Length: 294
Image (cartoon, rainbow, N blue to C red; front, side, top):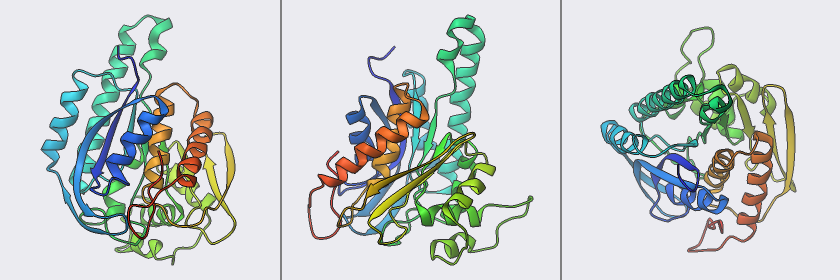
C-alpha cells in the first residue's frame, strides 16, 4: 500500500502552469494525497487565452493509465478536459475497468474488509471552454463528455457549463438538437442552477456542485450542492480580478479529500475553503488572469 492515497488524474498540459495538470498536481499535493497524472492533451495557451488543443491519441492515454493501474492502488479519479470524444470514451472504459477490479477484490475479501474496496470516487470538472470562451477540445465538448456523466460521483460545473450540459443532454432517447450546448453556453438556455443540477443528476451524476463564479457581479459567490438526499449552499466573498485554474483547483482538491476518506460534505466544504484562500493569495505572472497560490 502507498503511504499517501493516490488520485488518478486525466487532464491537459497548460504551459502557463496555471490550470490543467499543473493545477491538479499542486492542489492534490497540498491536500496530502499524490497525483498520478495521465496527459489527455497538449495545449497552446498563456494565462488568458487558449490558442490550440492537441489531444493525445486514445491508445497513448490508455497505455499511460493501464501502466499505473497495474502497479498503483487508486483511491480517487479526477477528470479535466479529455481533449476529444475518443479520449472521453477511453477514460470511461478505464473507469469501468478500475471499478470491476475493485468489485472483484471486494468479493474475495472478508466481510469486514469489503468496504476497503468500494468504488473509487470520480470527480468530473466539465470544462467546456476557457474563461474567454476558447474551445478546449475537438468537436462538440458537451457531447464528448456524455459517456462520463453517468460515471461521475461528483460533477463540478460552473453556471454556464451546467446550463450547457443540461441543454445538450439527450432526453427520452432522442439526440440533442445541434448546437444546443453552445446555445446554453451563450446564455440562451432557461433554468436555474438547481434545475440544471437536477437534470445532471437524472443523467447519473450522483452529486452536483454548481459553482457561482460566473453568475453575476454580486458581492457573493454562491455554490450549490445537490446530492441524493442533500442540498446545501455555500456563500463566499467575491474576490476582485480573474483567476486561471480556479475550477481545476476546486475539483482536484475535492478528489484528494475524498481519497483521504472525507465524506462528500466534508470534502466539499474543505475544498471550497482551500480554493478561496488560494484565490485570495493569488499572484500575477503577466497582465490578465492571476494564478491561485495553491
